[in-house]
Length: 161
Image (cartoon, rainbow, N blue to C red; front, top):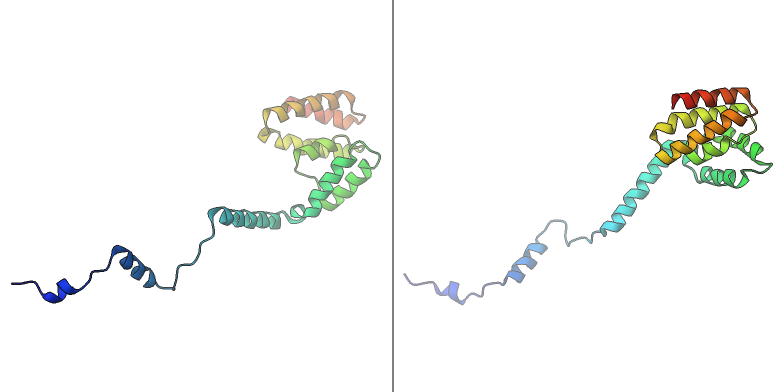
């Protein structure tokens, strides 16, 4: 049986033409441009940060970060104690290690004791350098604090560590 003439005369499409036809036949029309991976990662991180800020409440706001910076600037000045009291009323005891360390210089025994307790609770999850610094700070407080309850708490915390 001889080959049919229709098959031989017909021009076969190239692979390129086949791919183009296949692309046109996809549902949803032409291909949509995809975002680059870096941009998608930025969007994901932004969404995570916004969700985290939502769960943090007041502490997730930019005002909280500004207050922390202000607390750092005022450390060692006459305005420090007043600002700390205002900060604690607004936001409560902070979780940031450096800020807690600054609160140990406050003039009220209740604030210092609460900061010590908060730091002692976090000490296990801190780096070895931070733990050593905390132990040194406790030793100094145990010897030099003007508040007997702070001296006692510092000694007890040192014994527990």
